[in-house]
Length: 278
Picture 1: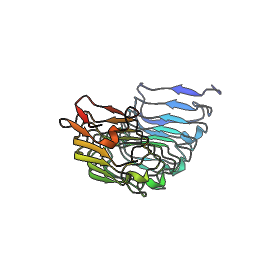
Picture 2: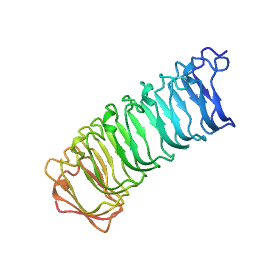
Picture 3: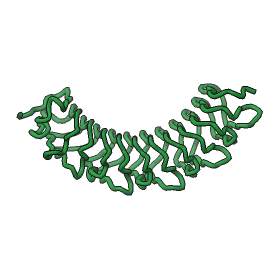
Picture 4: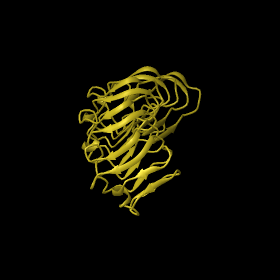
């Protein structure tokens, strides 16, 4: 028995069906277990791996709901990779009280993505949900440790209204590109937000950056590949903004005086033309 084994790479093999952890074959010393790129449909007996911190289960054949329970998933897990399967639900995750990163991207989640205390521990710092078919993100306000939220390339449309019950004020990065958004409202409550990615949506016409919708903490804002004709900010709204991307909008994008006055501290990136009056 490899009693001191900490990392075990078994990815890209031909394991299929149920993957069963038992004491004869897997030492409890394992901290990282890679089972990605196989043909697995279930993970059983994992509670025995009491030191496990990182579990790679992406690129397998998990279908439907993942039921997290104490017999199969040790509470020591910090990073759980489940992307690129065919999952439609994630349940029971509250037992993973040390979980910091959860990858559920590239699955088959549809409609409202609902966060509640039974299924998602408040310890999560990174939540990755891109490339599903989500139309809304609900209940995320309970994730008081959340720093990065990826919900890009989904089917969220219209006005996205940020409310405290759905979006934790702890968020530092939010990825929203590749949806069908027409506006971003109420984001001023995200007082720790530094990166806001809104490119490749349906933002149209004139965009005014105001404190109610865009917190002054934002440093990096991407508005590329929309249908904007101008971008302006109210005084004091962009005191920390250092990168503004407006490439790929319609014609010449007019950048307002308040934004232009922050150059050269503010870099305005565009492969198309834009105008500044100051």
